[in-house]
Amino acid sequence: MLLVDELANRDLVVVTGKGGTGKTAIAAALGLACRERGRRVLVLEADPRESLPQMLGADPSAGGVVSAGERMAFQNVSPRRVVDEIVRERLRFGPLIVRTLKSPIYEQFVDGAPGLKELALLAHAQRVVAKGGVDLVILDAPASGHGRALLEAPRLVGEA
Image 1 (tube, rainbow, N blue to C red):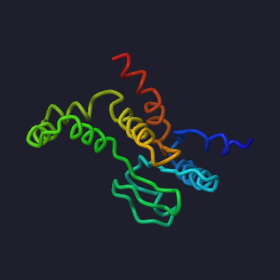
Image 2 (cartoon, rainbow, N blue to C red):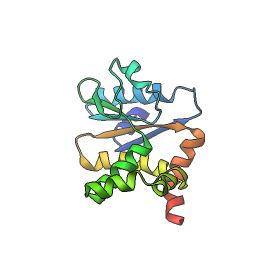
Image 3 (cartoon, helix red, strand yellow):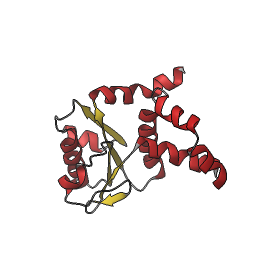
Image 4 (cartoon, helix red, strand yellow):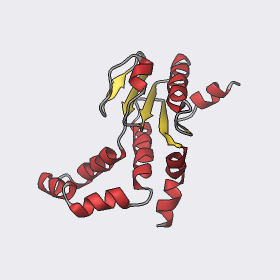
């Protein structure tokens, strides 16, 4: 069995490595290869520069889900936007949502809580998998220093 066949049968694949080594190209190529194997694929890109659109011949996502042909889409994911979205879902009361999101305490918490942004990326990927509609989520994770923090985030938060 080829490695791509094994990866295509997963729910979530995280691609990480040193910056500038082609992580995004690998994530895009893996997505295309898995799509060719009949999987419905969503590639999540954590880099705000959005390199995926150029590689896939599509418009930038600006945070939305963009189709990249049959059975494939991509989305640029901002950890802060994910945390804000979770706040909106949980609070469900307009004035309280606005007050919370504009609070300096909230700002400091989101910016400073160890592992929160990394956990938000993983949580978003997991939520996409749980919702269905795609067979495979490929997370084009931050460069290895941050990618390592991403993979350690669940343990760090669990210990906290």
